Length: 148
Image (tube, rainbow, N blue to C red; front, top):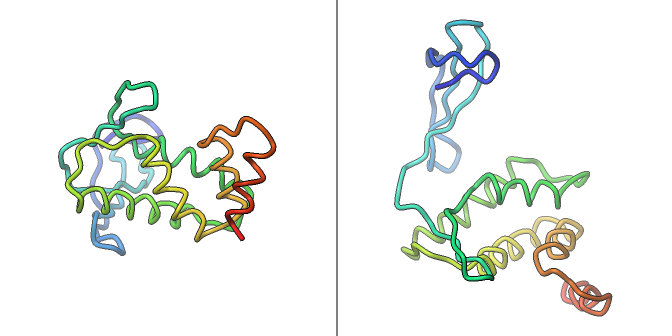
């Protein structure tokens, strides 16, 4: 594992334990070059999920891309990154249980919106405003009405 501080690839595992939901293993590592400690997560490797975009093109699912979008929507809101990680874990678990290898970006966005609505209304509206690409105030107002 490459050290995020110095780039050295030699490290030792200091601590290892399963995550709270048991879907990954959390490892604390120490770089043998600079001594800095960092955390890594191991997840079960499975068939890659393909996202079918609205223009018909496809790309490999990227957990970090979804996380970035959620973090932007949740900026300055009382939502911990761990909660967003759990949200994404639940989406991934649902997709694995459905044995899907392809999913539309709209469907993935809808799955995120449903879960985000349970966490925070403001984050929901922020995510929806980008994801649904509102064209006018009426569309935005309709989304707000749906929260009541």
